[in-house]
Length: 440
Ligand code: 7TS
Image (cartoon, rainbow, N blue to C red; front, side, top):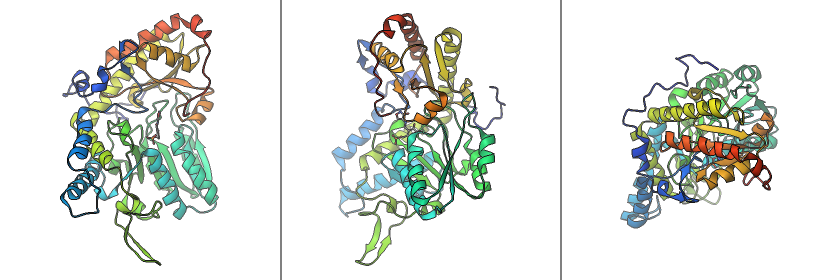
């Protein structure tokens, strides 16, 4: 598929503007590890990324020097912790160009953020007969919360399909929207196909019928320059652990008006200004949505991760991944096409660094295990996107996914390993195949 040079998803950056994956690697102690006697080649970044020393240090420093609860005390440690935790909200606001840090709600992960939007906004604003539009490429985390709230409110779910190239059917979306549409919830980037969706265009479609657009940025935000004002979206969810940050911290961003339309859903400590036996006065944003003691260390670590990415420049991150992806696709097409089935767009400029494939006649888990024997970490299975796999008519895929520290040599290692596995196909076919897909 060919795209215009002014396509909205193209990033005109250059990876030689101080972006050097070999230097970046020095910040990641884990990349020194050996697995099965070989230097680790970590290609499972869509599941979670590795953490640089700077993030690990920031978390250690918090626990060693100013560990205290936030917003609860006048003592020095509590004030230092509160300041750092609040500042982390500011850093994340800057990272996505939010209007204000008060629009940044820290959650556990994308899944929690999406559930929060579905229940806290949906419960208050959905009516019987309303429609929610999703796509067949959604991760379960941006599908199941909507299905639950739709059931509770008697709303209807509709799904937009994909083309044979793995792109969203915008024509179908345009036909599907109506005055009944209240929500379009869509991923910024597919965690299987890598497809980058045109969020600006979808936002326009949503707003043309006064619907809101909820964007699952779990895969998009770590890999693409994201500007929520420019995208003109209503809500965005993403996870810290997929963008160099720790696990257990995620982000819900919402336009202030939209956040004000949500009911406080998880309530308790920290969400209130005052409580009597009969009444409650809710806290200001964002605190009324951060119930209980938050993941303070996680928030601080995530801010350091965002700063790290901003220093590199998200345009450069994107460009680096386009180069690695384009190189991989070229090698697959030229050298492996008789044995490898690839799923997703072939043009690296409109997809992220996610390569899902199968080796014909081999189970995806068998390939994943064989790659691990060769020191290469990939994910196999249905990647928590079962409906997408069924739409593609397959039971699972092998998925390699890149990030800032991956190199062309690692792509070479993957391609050479696949050649080795293809060479051993007859032997591997006879081994018992695990048919359980851990975690989906
Ligand atoms: N949305 C998308 C598009 C995702 O890829 C994921 C995680 C989530 C939501 C949920 O993120 P979490 O941090 O709340 O778990 N995706 C994957 C994956 O592709 N492999 O492991 C996790």
